[in-house]
Length: 293
Image (cartoon, rainbow, N blue to C red; front, side, top):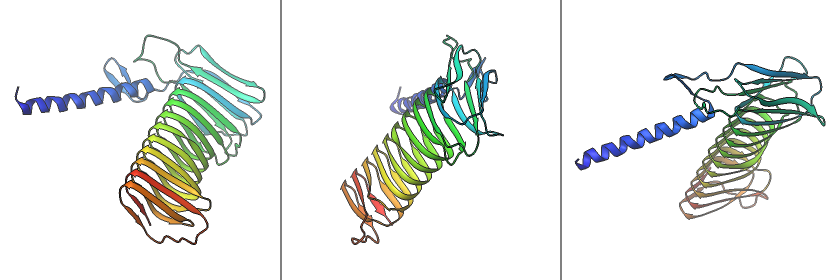
């Protein structure tokens, strides 16, 4: 075997390894399903195993090991919960201590590749303003537009997505955070990206991953160990800070605060920096560039 052939084989094996790894992750999350060598992307269970309707608007607690959680706008002023699973025997929907409690776990089985994904669908009024706690292992949390909802999500593997909510507190090991509009967001992400559209107060950290924000309206505390932090427009009303270990910081437009920037290895380019401003934003990188305005 010559050197060129060896290199080609190594590249092909590397590509194959990546494909197998990604496929396995998607299978475990229920995003694809192998059915006698036929790939199907519509793998959600359509088997309704339980549903309940509640007249009062209360806090909601959800526990699930594998499956996706959806929050959708209902047709009335009640809370409706629907559980979908092929064969789960570990679930409940109940009201306890003025809290709507929901649980849906996957039945333990040896059939890994032929189980459709569990679903929890919660329908609430668009004006819903209570607290929602979601504790999940593998799956996604997907929220429509609820301007007053306060969401606390804790997960191992999965994404958290929302069109609009008031508050998001999160702790996630592997996955992405994508919120179009939120008043306040705080949390910790180990591996993944955070993408925010419009936010008033941002206070979150990612160990490995990028943080991208379209607009900050009040205060920002952003930190990454490995990853870039990019902000399109920031209006600072309170002291703030942005920190990266290895990565760049880029803010296209910043106003309202003096910029105190430093980097160990990298370039700093700042325009229109007014030392007379009362508020201050500290920007620092260990290895990376800083560019503002």
